[in-house]
Length: 71
Image (cartoon, rainbow, N blue to C red; front, side):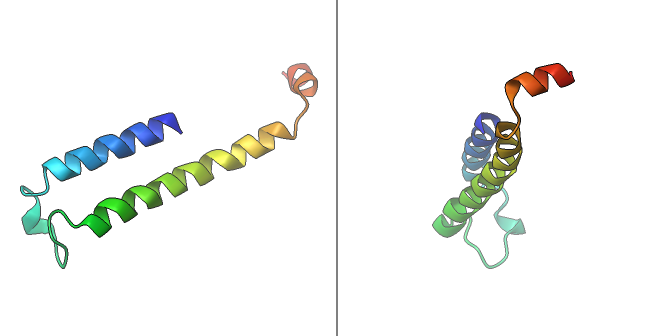
């Protein structure tokens, strides 16, 4: 989750910085719309968390001794 969160924070900061430059590409949204700047990072965090939880749950079901013997 650390790389995902770092990327999300960096992306939000860059998006906030480039908002005026990219204002011509936005339709129906102001360049610094607070709803967008809150909802998109939350959605990306949820997706990253969901994608990390599934393999972690599978890994907890395997005994460490069995995993070492298998390799």
